[in-house]
Amino acid sequence: MIIYTGGTFDLFHLGHVRLLKQCRDVVGETGKVVVSLNTDNFVLKFKGKTPVCTFEERAEVLRSCRYVDEVISNTFGEDSKPAILSVGPQFVAIGSDWAPPRDYFKQMQFSQEWLDENGIKLVFLKRTEGISSSDIQARINI
Image (cartoon, rainbow, N blue to C red; front, side, top):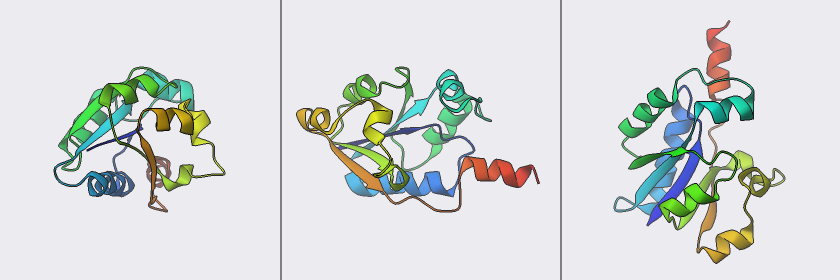
């Protein structure tokens, strides 16, 4: 079993750890957790600012996490379908903060039909409230 998740993972924190642990829990110890990491250029385009940590720094931190088996680069930007297909997962995981009414399908540029055609289930994992990279940056700037 393979689970795919993606993101920026800047200023790695408890929320990231819990998300990745939940990914591991979905596929079990013999499964594979693959993280598609957003490039610095994509983050700049999407969020309007570069991450605090570079792509290479964020990738190394993710690779050191015991719940992560592989880190790939999100080289396709907003269209996540090629990256997902390159991994061949049975699951795509995202935090519950992306559950409806937010439109995760529009964000990722795929549909439920596309997931069904490729035998992939979308799973929403519980978000850890009260922690984010932006929160950490705000704490530092006090």
